[in-house]
Image 1 (cartoon, one colour):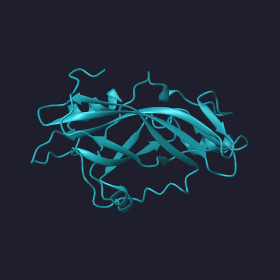
Image 2 (cartoon, helix red, strand yellow):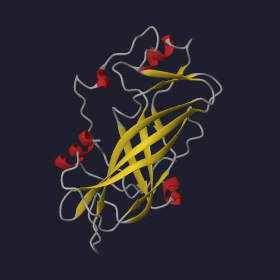
Image 3 (cartoon, one colour):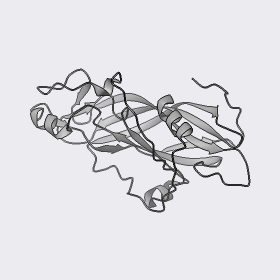
Length: 213
């Protein structure tokens, strides 16, 4: 989370509020991803905005009729954040917050380790139909203090709905190549996985931490 947030804040990456977007329907996904809020912190940004750091526990459930292969590091190499005012706006693609984040991985990141082409290793979970796997992911959104002005790239206080789009393949190489060789074990989950929506509450003027770690 710290890496992604620092890139966003220090490089000033543009945030756009899209008027249209794809449907957040998750029925056709091989996985149902249900996030649960574990902790929420408020961290200093500047005089106008602060960051809301969210630690999420996500339960992934195989909703197909066959075994699937899931990267245990799902979302760790790349994800995107979507925030809407309510469920209807989320369904209609009317987003308050949908930043474009530049992700930078180094050779030391576990996501840069090449997977075994013969069979999925310990980095992957094989889920039978209905079986679940739990993982954690950290993310952040930028909010503004109570102010009549609108600050671009931030959301206001109140109740919102959040959804993540998670990269399911986080290793070097094309997922399709591994999917073919692993077919005897199960269906490899790749592409983007959307989580179910999560309600978040943003206070107007929270007490912020000056040095979040």
